[in-house]
Image (tube, rainbow, N blue to C red; front, side, top):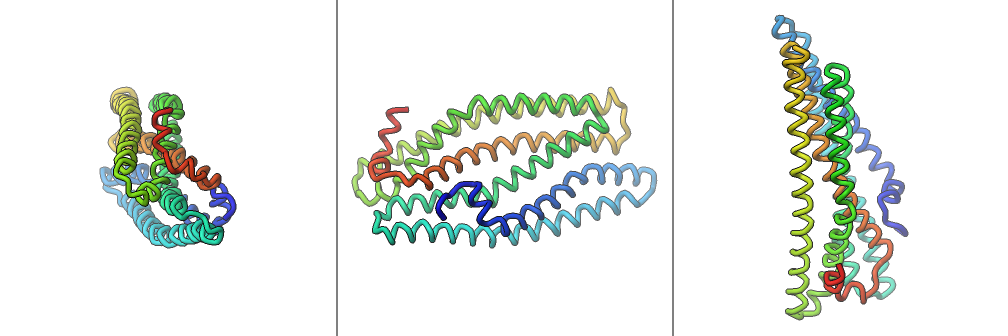
Amino acid sequence: MENITHGEILKKFSGKISITFLMLVLENLLRVLEPLALGMAINGLVGKEWLGIYIFLGVEVGMIVVGTLRRFYDTRAYGAIYREISEDISGEAIENHDDLSPAIGRADLLKEVIDFFENELPMGLTSVFAIGGALIMLFIIAPLTGTVAVGAALLIGLVFLLSKKRMISLNKLINNELEARARVFMSRQKEKLEGHFGSLVKHRIALSDLEARNFGLTYMFVVLMIAFSLYDSVLLIGANMGDVFAIITYASQFAEGVTILPYMYQQYIRTQEITGRLKDAPSTEETEEPAKEVQEL
């Protein structure tokens, strides 16, 4: 594979990936309907009617079937993709009689890219459906709560936009260390090993601290939005039991989506840096002493 990027992977393996995406779309459409169906079931049971509960059970069974089949398929599809690209990377290094240490490091990094497609991307698409579906339903049954939710989403987006540059720098340093790991081990020098692990831990702590700050701000906005949805649905609208439940559930669904989507964004930034590294194939000098970049940051 000449260029290893998110776009090229999607293009080359479009058949395999499109199947899992179609199942994911169907699964999430059913997920969006879940709170509405449950609200209908509650209102129906209060009125001693059973149609609502049948609709709710149908939605749940559909989610279980589609979700289970997708997970069986994903593991096999993405495993085949990882195997093919890894064979290309290692095969090229062997044919060119190159040092295999960088190839080993890049093969490990490649696994993170494939894991992104298998795990984080579906999670991100689920979040998009959760956010979009919840907003549509909130604007229909509780417009004021929908407006507050949009405001919370914009504030959360601003938090992650402001931290993007720092996030990219730290991921680059972490990937430098991971790519150089095989070479550091093969050097059999205690000082290099200590420097490698010390730098890796330092950068991961810095990235974790950044993520923790973003997490705290995100949840603060989310909690305020959910609290307002309670006030809006119970005191301002005066909705019945089923509608109150639907409003709170959609608000919670929206909250879950806006907290997961930034994580997916972080992983995209990390894997984007990895694909650029796989494409550029760094030189020996760049991988021998990654610790130099630590001092320059």
